[in-house]
Length: 183
Image (cartoon, rainbow, N blue to C red; front, side, top):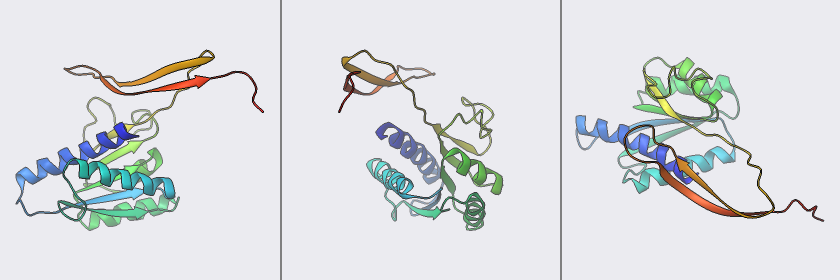
């Protein structure tokens, strides 16, 4: 979660800083945030704020987050996205594949940064992950099940670099597995 938050905040930071370089130093950027709904999404918004703050961007100072909760209704996502575009936000950030697809369908010009739970190419969010093109970019998560032998094992996650540089260690955790029934 920490690495994802850092990537997302980093992506928004790069966008905001590139726009800040082009604009007046006193401009406050307007960022629409569209969430599907529920407490987990509000925790994600809090994580986004924390990640942006770590990069020196504070909600209410350099940018303002306009959060729209669709309460699980994809039609409400489209209405929210159209409304944010009409309000001339600088970009829309969306969580989940279905929400991001709805935001993309509902808007015409505003840039979109997404976090998708599934492959953005397979779902139709972007034509190519290396070069998403157009006005939409983002990242996706994944989950995997790894069968481990009984005992203690250390699991490490790496960010695999596809360009110049090296892979990044994201973190390690030691787990203990027991196949013996409990209870």
